Image 1 (spheres, rainbow, N blue to C red):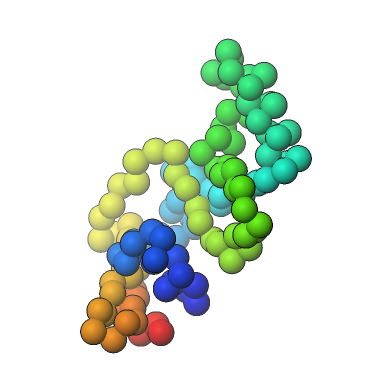
Image 2: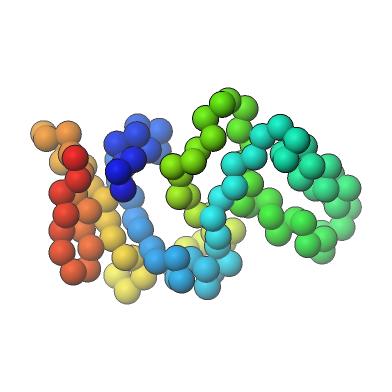
Length: 117
């Protein structure tokens, strides 16, 4: 959450948060940012598997991003889900909303609200 202002510049000011266990049940998982030889190795595996939709390596596709710059995204904690996420009051763990007049954000959880700078 300490990187929220940086991430919101790129991704938007509003967000929904879910628990890892909920996302995991939907087949989701953490994203891997790859570059150089690591990305090239995965790209070769994916290319070799292009004609077989049942190849296990294809399950990695939604969870890999190719980065071209030197930012290693070490602070990122992005998870992805390769399917629609059912959104309901029972599933959402927290909301992130901007407080524009103060340049801060509020995170509303089911238990309490927390201001973030």
